[in-house]
Structures are given as structure tokens and as C-alpha cells.
Length: 236
Image (cartoon, rainbow, N blue to C red; front, side, top):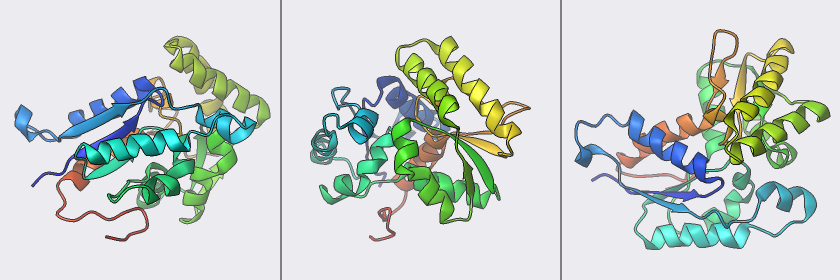
């Protein structure tokens, strides 16, 4: 029997919709009933994760846990988090519920390892960079992560918040500029390590963009059809 996926969303709303669209798009369905049952909590009132991590802003943990528990109570069999930076709170989320949670940075590192990519550039929020979510996961697979310098990181954040404000053209300008610099600095590919980034940055002849949202969507489809799920630590 197909499992129900719950999406902790709203961080931001466009990124949540993008994840849902990718799950639907990549599902090999011939009719409505073949698609996965998705319950999405587009909880945009969750406080900003980067502000909380770097500037002592409101702790989003209770809000994210509330969302996770709401989804479990609604009938979800496993959860995903439609925000990279929110994975900083992964353990607290996982410990608050009795169903598994998939880990997007970890699944991305596994994908890079499987495809023999050894050096990647990382575009992500200040919070994701600071907490080294992707660096830790990639280091476990001997993958070198190239980070933007301070000025480039300011441009990345400008691009991310431009997308959150629906200015896609401005977002693309900032992010593509930094991505090209990282490629010139030796990156084989670019991790779009914020769920807003894949909305404007795509692979081209010049840049290979690794989209963690797409990777997660494909894992969701696979997991929904598995008889038994495991959590991020490999436990049943």
C-alpha cells in the first residue's frame, strides 16, 4: 500500500509548491489515483531560520515541531522538510514524532557520491553555510565543498530574498553570477542549497546544477512505495 508523505512547508511557500510539483512530475502515473497522497503544511508563519541561527532571532523549533506533529496526526507516514536551512533543527524534529523524516542534505551527498562528483560549489543561505549542513554530509563521502567568499555570499542572499519577493529576474542575476565564479574556481557542479534557488538556476552547458529538491522528490516517490521506511540514521 502506498504511503502518505507530509511536507513541512512555508519556508518559503514557492519552494513548497516546487517540491510538490516535482513529486507529481516525476511520479510515473497514468491517472490521478496513481499519484502519491501528499499532505502539505504551508506554515509560512515559521520564523526565519537564518535570523534565528545567526542573529538570535525567534527560535523556529517549536513552530517546525508543531508542523511535524500536525502532519503526523493528519495521517502522514513519513515527512520531508521543504527548506534546507531548517535541517539544522532535524534532530529536534525527528525526536518529536514517531514517523521517519527524510534528510535532504544527506540524500544530496549520497547522490553526488553515486555520480562521482568530488568538488562542488555551494549556494545556500548564511544559516546553511554557517551550520555546515552540506559540508558535514559531503565530507562523509570525501566530497570537497567550495563556499562563496563574504562578498559573493552577500550576493547569494540578495538573490534568495529577491526570489522570496517574487523577483525572479533579479534572483537569477545574483545567483548565476556567483555560480559561474565557483565553477571557475574548480567546482564540478553547483549545489542549489536553498529551496528557492532551483526556481531560477538550472543546468546549462556551462554549469551543472544539483537540485536537492529534485533529489528529495525522487526519494519521496521511492519511499512512498517501500514496504518499510528507515530514518536518516538508518533505523527502522
